[in-house]
Length: 87
Ligand SMILES: Nc1ncnc2c1ncn2[C@@H]1O[C@H](COP(=O)(O)OP(=O)(O)OP(=O)(O)O)[C@@H](O)[C@H]1O
Image (tube, rainbow, N blue to C red):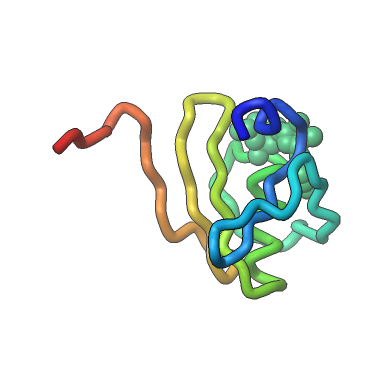
């Protein structure tokens, strides 16, 4: 998985956690999706695919490592890497 993560594009993972594909391009119209200022095409298309299909999308930003989860076209979780809680 680590080496496939080097590919451009997204992983497609089933609800049961099985990876179906890697390095896929999301061919979707992301123009009207509300994403945070400064985020690019990858985050917008991740949000858009959850608006148009029954999916969730998880992104890890290459600039800073912020993790976001999108559902129904909206960001529902945001985890900043410097606020990591260790139990
Ligand atoms: N619709 C898409 N499906 C899959 N990959 C995409 C899509 N749009 C952009 N990417 C890829 O994501 C990478 C980052 O693109 P971009 O900088 O526009 O996204 P970003 O949302 O700012 O993400 P990051 O914070 O990681 O840079 C690029 O290599 C680009 O090819």
